[in-house]
Image (tube, rainbow, N blue to C red; front, side, top):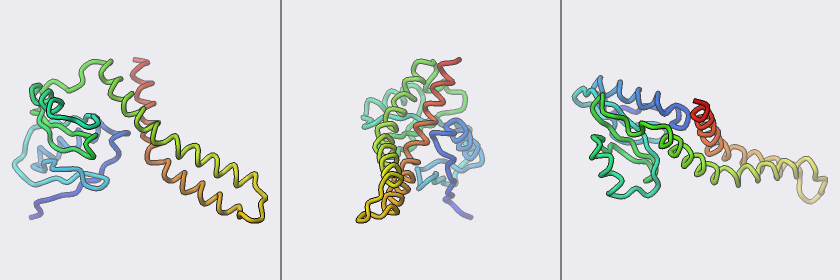
Length: 176
């Protein structure tokens, strides 16, 4: 029997709650989250557990950061890039974020981070496409600007879509 299983992620920026519930369901079946793996998770076969998972974003987390979660009943499971952290706790443990201001703060931090990454690619995409439409230079083929614009657009998708997702979540939270 297989002892390790790969589970693809739907995207933490888009489906954070669903992803954490999905991991909790796997834990009840004995598939326990071990680490992030590519665009998903690596689960290890073990004893079924009734646990819940929670996600937090904290750049350059230190020992004090993890100690705060541990004191609240949450165990650190894994991290990705020392910025995205998943914790687990027995089902019924008080959630990491319980009030609206801290949830808003969490998504504001992530939106700002994604925005900083997305902005240069957004600007370069617009500039390359404008140049491709406006140029008639014989020395620089129009296709060069179109290809550069397309490459920039493809790269923009990775920080740009999460940025829009966090923006949407913040709008929903502020309307409530």
